[in-house]
Each structure stands twice: as C-alpha cells, then as structure tokens.
Image 1 (tube, rainbow, N blue to C red):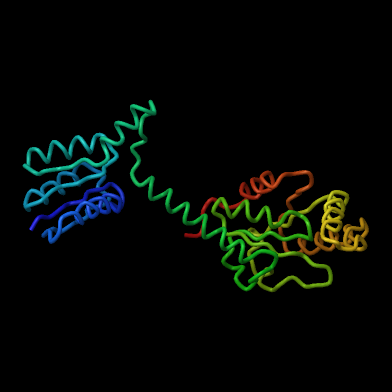
Image 2: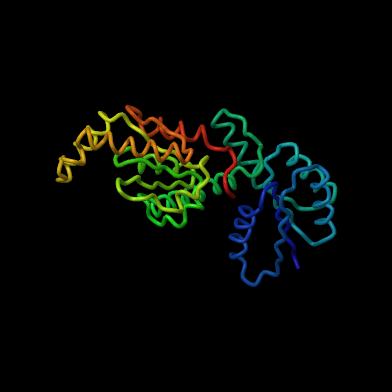
Length: 267
C-alpha cells in the first residue's frame, strides 16, 4: 500500500486537503495519508525523510522556509524518496511578480484564520450584549462600556468587536440600579463614556426630532447635566475609568480604550 507523507511546518491541513482532492480521481486507490506537522528544524526534516524511505511512499510538503525546502529535496534524493514541493513554486512565482521577499513564517494562514474566526465570534457576542442585553453573561466580556444615553456606547462596542475584543455595553438609566452582573465585572474592564453636557444635549435633540421623542426632559440641558452627574458619582464609586468622547470619532474613542486594555486576551 502506498503511503503519502504530508509534511508541514504548521498544521498540514492545506496540503492534506490538496492530496485528498487528487486522490478522489483514483477509484479504489490503496493509499494511506500520514500527516507530519510542525516540521521546522533540519533534524525533524531528516527524521521524516528517513521514515518515508522505509515505506513505499511519496512525500508531499508545504514548507515555507527556503532552507528546509532545499534540505528536504536533497535528503529525499539521497534516500530515493519521491518528494513533491507544493509551496516553493508558488512562493517563487509570487515573489517574482510581486517583487517582494516572502516572510517564510510558518502558520501565518492559520493565524489569519484564527483571527478572523475570533472577530466573527466577537461581533456576534457584541450584538447579543448590546444595551444591557444578557447582562448575566457580562463575566465573559473582555471590556464593558457604560454611560448615559447617546454617548456612543454601541458604535464603540462594535469598533472593538471588529478588532476581536469581546465587548458589551450597559446603559446608566436614571432611577434604575445598574445590573449586579455589571458591578461584579473587574473595574479594569469597565469604561464609562462621557461627553460635555452641551454636546450630549445636541445629540439627543437630533435623535428626539428624528424619532419623535419629546425634547423635554430627554434633551434638556438640565436633565443631561443631572444624568452626567449621577453617572460620574456611580462610576467614581466603582473605580471605572472615564473616556471623554466629546468631539471624538468612534475610532478615536476605540483606540483610546484599546490602549488601556491588557495585551493578553481570553483564548
């Protein structure tokens, strides 16, 4: 039985998929596919070639290191092993046309895929934890935004989510106690968004006109000042950090928060 050794400096999933896509063209082929992943040293390369030489085998590899590709070719020739380089020709053509040098860093595709997967999960989390929804799950959030109405909590939360942060937001509502789950979140993960009373009243007037909300008391400057004062007292007691969003874009506010967050994230 033919044994196909799939050799990779990362997971080997891409190479194995290509091999199996080819194998379906051969009905009833007696073949075993064996994956050897994380091959990143000369010693490891020699070991895999020696293993393949002891079998009726083909060696297929996707090594991004030019040095290791040359080595596996030389070792395969010496051992009489038929080897196929699936990565080298692609990198060579791309380098020639792009006039760039490849990074030769293993696992970049997997890292990109993981990052994209995390981003999707973070966005889904944000939509399910907007405006105080599912507050009982706030312990899963890496960052929680709070503040009174119209202080850019939702757009800032989504900005963070699209950068892979699990974010939620909980409004501070006059006359209502904040949810216990919010009070249980470590203060280092909670940020309250503040605006000058004049700017906030202006934003509320725009919303009130657009949505048919009575201007008084929602958009009155006195009501806005009372709400901001209440929020300031609450957040000071809880030790939550204030972010001034007055005259700032969502991107500016988001970047300021990210700069204050720990580098390490949840797995």
